[in-house]
Length: 336
Image 1 (tube, rainbow, N blue to C red):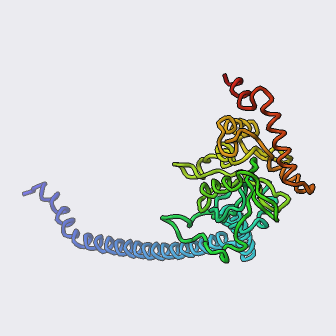
Image 2: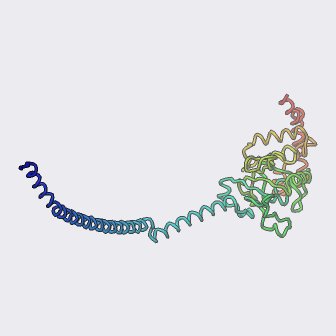
Image 3: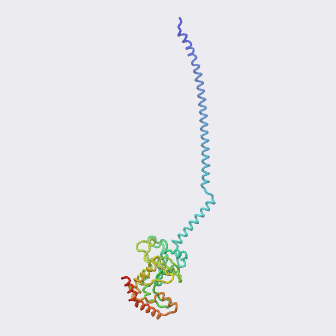
């Protein structure tokens, strides 16, 4: 009996009988291909790792060379360092010297007051160690800090041997006081009182002096001010010592050549002197002018005597009194 599907099934059975051998062959081929691919992948991975290591080594080498180059560029040559150090050292030395000479150097005597100091009319602070006449004194210069509490580590000498060649002889500018007894010459009237007033006012105390010029006796003519009552002296100025002398009647306005009056001006000096005369304070208590210190020195320079001085003083007083009741009457009429 013929069954068609059997014939068709035989090739299928034959085909199925040959399938294991073909499948085995295909598996073998795929396994070989896989091994080849794995080998290529491993080789490529090894090459990649080798290349990566080479690149890292190359990058590290480049970084090292760049660091070395940067160090070379950032490190100046030795000559440049030497020149820069010399320049900076010179500038620092000059700056320190300027600051020291301007603010910290102590002026020991009048000879230490150089023309450049007088030219800029600088101010100095110091302690009055002695008063010679009623218009000059000795100043111990106390610059910068360290002279007063709470930062006191320097002191002003008190013994005469310690003060020798350590003070500046200062002449008070703008005022002339009665002359004391010198070189066998008698003192002018009210000279002792004027000297006592000045000693009580400034001796042993701090004053501020604006150095102006050097006079014929090598004294330093200075505008002298007293310490301000509240604020420090480097912020503001105190009262003028010369004006205080005129106000107390212990001096006259200095009107000869080279007179200095500071910021106050000659008119202010004359006004204060006129007030003292009108109030009969100090040397004006008798209401007569007498012989001025300038006339006194001029007379003795010309070999005059005390009789001439008394005659000159009496003549001047009579002249003033003949002018409508004297100077006091004139001032009263002006102010009224």
